[in-house]
Image 1 (cartoon, rainbow, N blue to C red):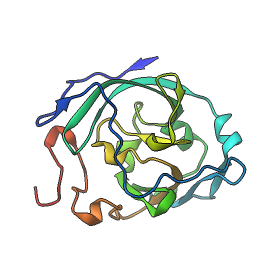
Image 2 (cartoon, rainbow, N blue to C red; image 1 turned 90 degrees about the vertical axis):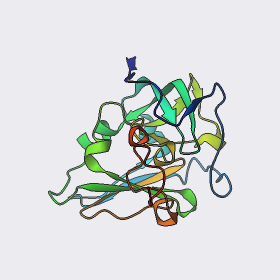
Image 3 (cartoon, helix red, strand yellow; image 1 turned 30 degrees about the horizontal axis):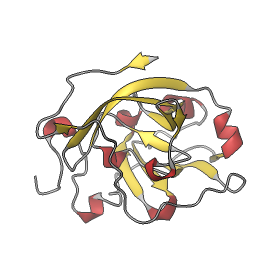
Image 4 (cartoon, rainbow, N blue to C red; image 1 turned 180 degrees about the vertical axis):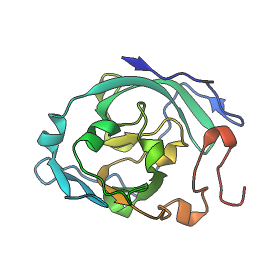
Length: 191
């Protein structure tokens, strides 16, 4: 198991032992047979996984910290899932691909630079603390990006769109900072 422990708590954060649930809209239903994850956009060929196909991909475990824009931090979260780099190894990116727009159920999106996601500590998690992630925390699949505020760790992931030009995601269009780096306290766009 890999541990990612740099300085633990960014400025302005308070450590909690709880795992608060925050999201916009209702928890989407999960249909195992209908569920698909697509990698598309600036790729040579779109790739799509069924739920069972995705679950057959090699898994990794990691422990990382989570930092929410609402000022809580939860330390030592144990995740299991498919590394983002595993997805990259299974697609052929076009040279123009520099950013990613992660799509989720309910029309939710979050944008991230490709180089932020292409890191050994980024994964698509399906387990938390040895158990399936609960629906309110993103079952069946949640992106985990420890170096960004937790809104960038998209719940209910359904699509990975590789793009040439950055496009703001759901919260970024509503005033959240485009980068969301907790160490720089990039909470809102006017900061």
